[in-house]
Image (spheres, rainbow, N blue to C red):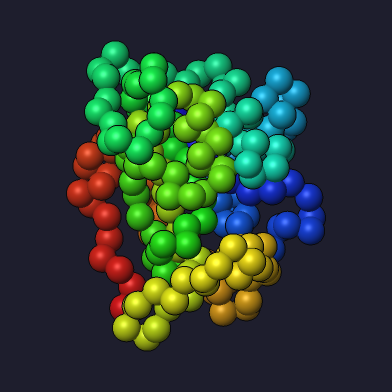
Length: 217
């Protein structure tokens, strides 16, 4: 079972915000892959869509908690698989036990450290200040899971990030609505991310990371 989680805030008022990039992508993916309509799972407090595949099963999950409580939904997924191999951590992580890889979990979310129109596949990385990811790391007692980080920062024509500065500016940006140009860029990025997910599921994380496409010019 592969579990793909899209992060965002529940409610129509947040649908078009940059902070809901993960949830927006997962809805696009569900429709494109022709997975079933969402069903609410009371135990997880999340919307779930599942399908049996030839090689493995696939489950999509949209937490219906607010972003900073995402871990409450993810930790209740019954099919999370922990590897028996301990994972090494840096000094900054204060989690003391259960430091195990969860190889069948992929979390998709927005990222201010990446320019819009780009994305990265990461593994065993700190939250980088993202409250939703931080909540999941705390709830699962590990950061050793895969993440697809979709850029939402403005940048120069040469790709230099112009990240908002200050807490107020950051909040205004991530909770602001996508512009038409940003939505167009996200749609162009969509098939590339789907390709990465496909490689991850069929070939494994390491091969998926080695096959990442070149940045858009």
